[in-house]
Length: 345
Image 1 (cartoon, rainbow, N blue to C red):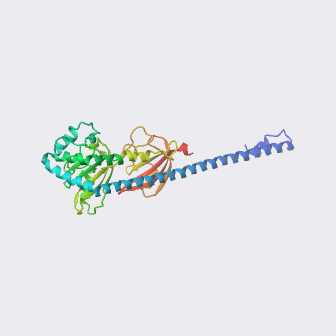
Image 2: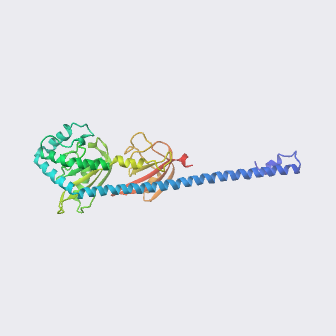
Image 3: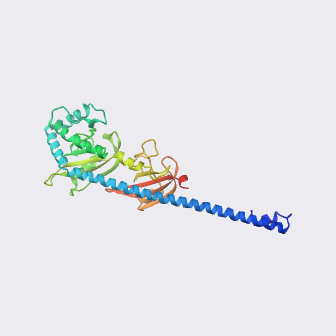
């Protein structure tokens, strides 16, 4: 109510009585204005603090995840240059040759079909009992490769010979003992990284493929990285490849540190599909949930970082998105942090 209107509504009072009342009215109006202003200033301070906190959290997560990705490259280099791996590839290649044209069917029967361990646990068999040179060598090499995989969290590890034969894998899925150039899985991403490695002139070339469904892993999302293996004379003798560690990547993305009650960090591909599971979802979101916001679009378009408000997330909630770019061996991703708008404001 304006002061003039308040004055007009006080005709029965004398001027001496009206002045104190109008003074009180002015004081109340000023106090109300100051209160509202203070509220918005406080809200703005909280919002700015949250924005700064989330941007810093996302930067820290980016740095830690980038270091982890670099450690995968380092692991692959160590394996490719390891005398143990070099010996294993040479020996498995020789043993493969002794099996002749029956290598695929024989090894799949021994290590998959007749393996007493259930699917998903075929790696527990140290060696077949078929009396072959291959099984003798498998008993020598498999335990230490399996231990390395379990310590590092990789989904699988593969050794190839120069002809594209998958002469060894840890988990013995249906791709084991097949030819990646001519066999059933020749068009898979595992075949892609093998052939790119074989074509490379530079020994340090490290082909990588982003996550896509992989049939031998029961259609689960898979990503591969590979490197050539050379002997002590510098001659190429084969290829070693990792199937990327989904569980470890999920652990990085699902950490709740610094994210409040509703915050989460997401790894997003150029197709806007998640490359890890959300910590807030009860079902897998890897390659199944889209994250399509102006902030993510801006980063894929070339901006280093971006923020967008009032987005709708994969759970149909209103969120704020903070995004920054991430690249690994030529593959572009966006690391995005999202938090519910009502937790920010």
